[in-house]
Image 1 (tube, rainbow, N blue to C red):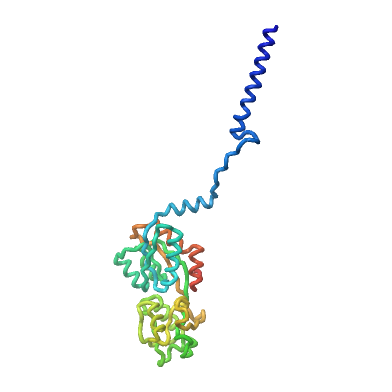
Image 2 (tube, rainbow, N blue to C red):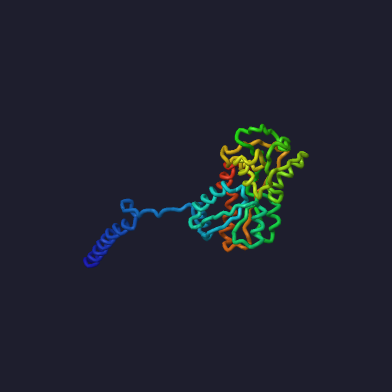
Length: 280
């Protein structure tokens, strides 16, 4: 009996010792309220992960974009915005009249994307481009010398033979739109020159080589007071659309596609609106 009692006492003592030894082990593992708690791992939101994933999935590249002359100022700003948001990618623009850009594409000029000032020119390049997306619209105004010294109030005034009027050439979108609205009002204008792009028209008026010219509203906005601007009523005006598309010959298709898609993003549209362009 004494022997059995002695064995039971030793087993009880061993159980108490084992329990005592388990306490610090559990505490060290964070099981007890008085133990040291390990720092939680930082969490990443699903939106941040998706954004980082989308950005990293597009390879960085140097892009060349052929763009209509009327986009000169705003695209320089937007190119810098895009490069800042997409490290490693640089966007270089080549500006000219849309008809000249189309000729460059057909001749195989190395470029990644194209933005014209009309859908007609873009539609003629279906073999060379992907599916275009209209990113903005514009409208024509009459550009005059600052202060409008000749008191030009309407399209009809441009028919005055004493005025030196310049227009864009008819093969240029701005020239085609100009002829369209003049014909619609049965107005005959004898321009002193026909320019290769709308910015050349603006320049003639800025330099005082012409009294007036038909340009886009955004051109007079970009001139910042160097010319005056006379609005044309909507029912007498024409709407210019700006389609953008990736060129099939690009060596950077994924990066070019990403840039063309970005041109319709809220950030890009905000910048276009600030420059005077309208939403499509």
